[in-house]
Image (cartoon, rainbow, N blue to C red; front, top):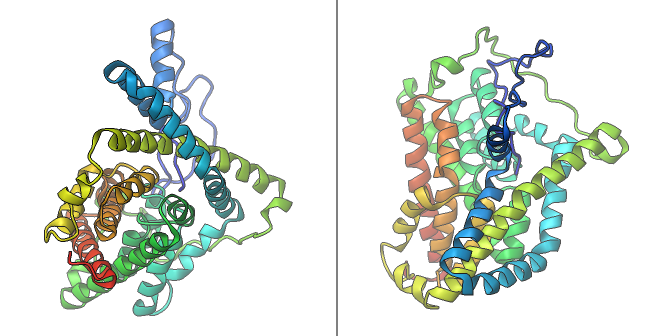
Length: 380
């Protein structure tokens, strides 16, 4: 999962990369001016601290105050779970960092060329295989739309991308099982195909829906209708010193992001195991309830915080009786409609396209979960 430093604004098609360093004494984008005094320096360090680490510390502090007797067992559960998942975590980090260092993510742009039907299918597949997160994909989407790529393949990629990526596949296979990881990947591709072809059909019936989709501030100043050439890919990136350094930096960045999130998820799972009845989720969102899948889809909008944390959390819920199609509905809908993903769409396109994105995400997630239930022979 790729990350963008929170203090920097990602460069989009309309925001060129700076060509000169800021004047001496001027505040930098990624380095705020130094604060004087002990309290301001402390607040500045607090703002620069990773939010997932702060959330983990806040959760541990809250547990120590509200449930001190549970703190020890929960920490043991968290440590044991992290140790058991360490090989999978290391493999997913190496995979994500290798994709970035080799430049393999630049191949995504090739999926949007050719006839629209073929482009939609390839874009959905590229979205499921893409290592880009919901925010990191914004510059790519902005460049594609500004370069004249039709909305349908872009929508296919945009819907499939937040659901799964190669590193998340490895984590899902390790924390839940390989079957669920494969099903989630197929769900991402199916959601992309459904959204892409639905967008293509709407644009064919109402051509104005597929035109002028970017917000005014996202429109390129000098659009030429041509996309930038795709950079070369170097699979043996370890032979290049610069790419080796990038691999190390990316791996460290992923570890700093993933470990606190996984720790939070395992702490929450330990609390559920300790405080909730074993069949609680089977009763609340049981597979025989007609509203289980729609409830999980709607619950994913506010409750889904991060794909990394959702994997072990859903694994624990499945172990406590939650049906797999309901868990799939939550993870697919939550990944596409979570606050970061939704805000990334909202800031880039006009409200009608944003509404189309949400409707396709919710309907598609519901249909896919019902299809998975039918394949398993459940009565959801």
